[in-house]
Image 1 (tube, rainbow, N blue to C red):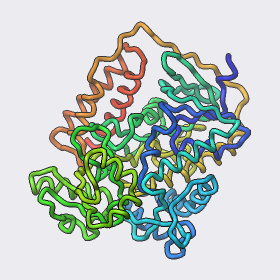
Image 2: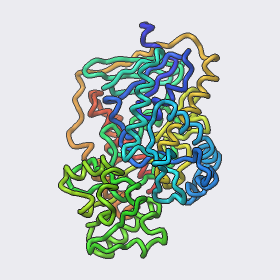
Image 3: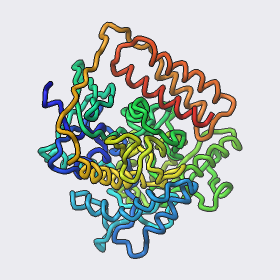
Image 4: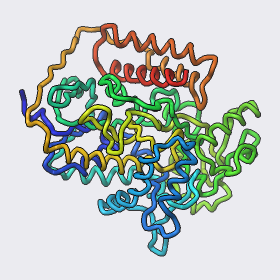
Length: 485
């Protein structure tokens, strides 16, 4: 047994949840972070709008933040965890500021808190329109300096098994097979966006962590609680749809239909600042009413200098697509954005299995209810990954010093999976469950997904990247449709 393969804690995923968890773990723990691609390729880095929270805000309160989150979440939120989220926001926003995160400020030196859909107060801290990348970059800098943390990137986790001393992880790095053992495991693997044909998520969001957790027998909850963001850039070509941040509407942008008319007054008194699920459903209803799926976001009535300075990343990305958002209306349409459900966890991000934790989008703390309030995701990732670290730190002294060295076997002569499986899964999901279930196609879609899942699990295939991702997508699709059928 190679002792260099043994760690106290293995964290799968290097987004904000995984990194912040490592930062808050005891320096006495030996930590391994495994990331599928490079560390900056994750949903955290794509978060534009900001992080919601009450921090040095005399005109706001955690109670107000909690009320807004309950309204957006359809009052299906976990009240205990939600209370933790809003009350501990101050702790973690303050901590990342100490770590060097640079939030925009006004000329008076106070933070420039912005407004987004569903919020009744300006409580969104931001760095222009690239807040996630700013936070992620500072956390990467911090983690990279920690002597007790090892990081392996461009490494695909193929399997996770429970052992007598903790967990063993099977990893594929290029053509090299690796394995690692740990006493504790933290799933911080992000979302499930690539199970859909169109998503705002990065290429790594294939639901692997939830799939591994399901295989381990961990409780999975509310996987059908999927958020479809109403304002994704719609060029009708790209699978990964560029997000037009909620903050654009927060700063006064209008939604317009195919006739260039504002229409939200037909559906909700909050107009463009209604929560995401309300706006997405409104667009779906307006599509049926007009017979067209051409929709636009219009902020041309605002000053160009303000637009360019407030939304530099969005402005540049749209410019590359041939649009000047200060003069042109932006074509948009809803697409998959976020998962509110996932691996069921408690107030310390502990799963239903001892020494197994889940943080960030792959977890289900219940704080979001059935629809996430804008900019609560980064806050959840920070608060509950810190709480997971605190719980692991308490349990660490009781952990055994030995490691079971599990041996993974691979059949390198097995055939690769048939082509087109992932495309078929995405097509089924896009037609069966987009914003609302398609009652006619749902049962047929579920049966097709079940056949794909059974084939991947029961037939002989080479365990390579295509197989692992296809199996994850099939498992996620199966669990989602099973809930809503």
